[in-house]
View 1 (cartoon, rainbow, N blue to C red):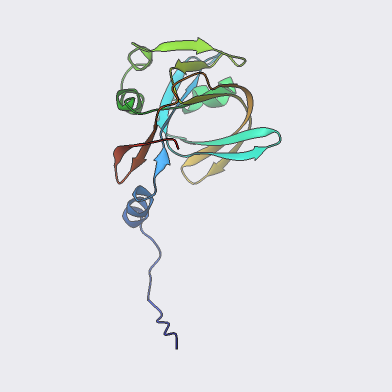
View 2: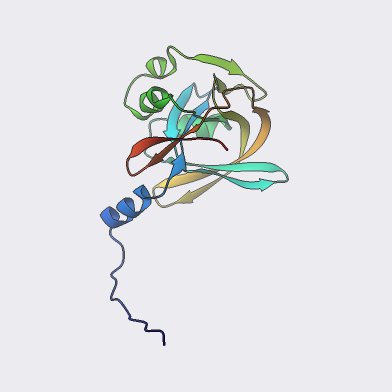
Length: 171
C-alpha cells in the first residue's frame, strides 16, 4: 500500500528559489560581444541548447546588467565555455570592473560575428542574436550559431553548484 501525504507549500519566495537553483550544477561560460555598442562580457550559467537545426542556443541576461544594452544593440555574442583552472576568468567577468580589466591578460580571437572568442576554452560558440524574449528581470537571447571553435582545451569543464566551482572531467 502506498501512502501519500499532502504537504502544505507556500508560493516560493525569492530566497527559497535562489537556494533551490544553487543546488543545480551548470557549466560556466563567459559571454562576450563587440560591435557598434561597444565591447562587453559577463559570466553566465543560464545557457543551453535550443535546437540543432539551425544550431541555436539561449543565453539569459539581467536587464539591469551594465552589459545588457551592448548585447541587445550589437546583436552578436560568443559563448565561451570555461575549463578547469579558469575560475579567475569567471570571477573577473562577474565582478564590477572596467571592460578593459575584464579582457586583460587573456588571448582573444575573432570568428564570423566579431565577438571576442577566448583562447583557450573548452568550446566557443560564435552567434547572432535572432530574438530577444523578456521574462521577469531577464532577457532570453535566442542565438543562432554561426561558427564553433573546438580547438581549445579538452580538459574538464568548469561547473558551478552549491555556490562554488567544481571541475568535472569530460568522459
